[in-house]
Image (cartoon, rainbow, N blue to C red; front, side, top):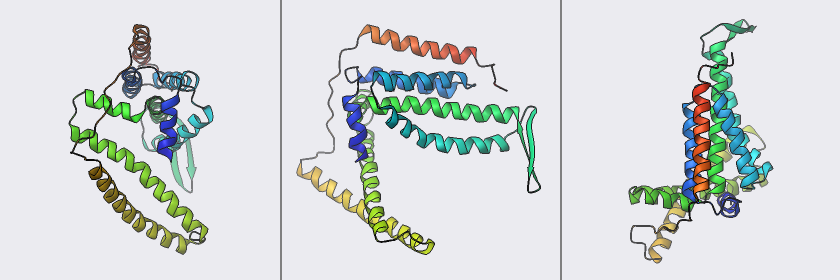
Length: 261
């Protein structure tokens, strides 16, 4: 399953011996800087450096990394196209007509669309660094160390688990329907999609019941235990991470007025 596939890389990557708290500081700090940047330069720098760290230092296969990155970028491209023609401000860059309707691209809309793409690219590269280098159980342990409510952590763990359970169920049902020619026409596709939704609800209910019985059989007392062991933090690693975040912050601040258009 996808859960085991991604978590396998997180368990065996080249940065496995680095303390998870430092990796979270590294990734979350980069995300915050990316979101607070008013121009694309800092997010693009963060995206390139995060991709390099993930592929070269964490030793994540480049083909896998870029295939994962294409999923959010495909959505952001369509959003950027909408912003390009809907938002305004600034001098006109391009004007054209389609079927009697006039469209105009301005400097303001172009800068905003590029900023959206850069933020998405930088944020997702930072998020994938965390996901591919830090096992989820260690992220939940870090949440526990912050003294977050136990119910929040337990629900997060269960939600994370069931996301991949439901994905596996959808794939299984869809493949079974495809083998039986369930998507050969529009009418059959709509009928198969409705059946898939109904069956998924039933399977989700059954999986939840089975999980409750399994947890009760293992003497579940309302709290999931988490490991509390942490690796040694090296001062050199801390210095490198802080220096990188300061560099990104300085780049975001110094390029705040350097719009592309």
